[in-house]
Image (cartoon, rainbow, N blue to C red; front, top):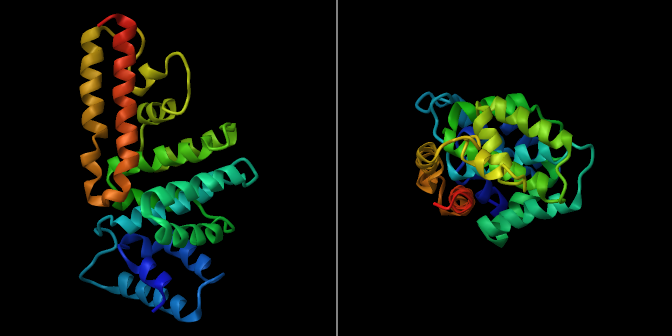
Length: 252
């Protein structure tokens, strides 16, 4: 078994089947040896036919989150009609930071092939939504905005695509606007991050902060492995920074 096959098979659960599995299978066909492709197809068959492990009830593994990132990133990165090298570099840098050189190389190799295939965002998100907890889906959205901002300009098409993905993932408008505000230097960004208006009183401010701390605490992503906690901590830090900024503005 090749090292690539070992990486691909490690930590995968629900992404072996459905539209995500189909996208990965397509990508494999462009660069992986026949033996590895057969292994992947066998894994798909075993996964979907195993009566003891229902597709509907399978849990999210670290590898599932990784593959979901790749597929959704491939959709967003093409939203403005072109593939920008800075966005590709951002994806690669993120994976190097999270997974280390060897695993990141494998992931990016797969990504470069997935990005060539047209994938239905709705179908992919329906699959993710059925198996991934809300906190992990919020982290996916945070990553996607990072990709869109990597070329220093978020196009309307990219924003529209991420908004659609958020809807498909059952992420509500307030959560969407909160994460989006983490990537913009607007005057009211801190308020949007905390999901409150500028008219909120100090008691409402403190209540909103406590609510957001609970929602975005990195401990909610512990099951996805340490490699995914850094992004969660960055998002959590944005919440704290927004709260501190508003307190300074109000002299609290």
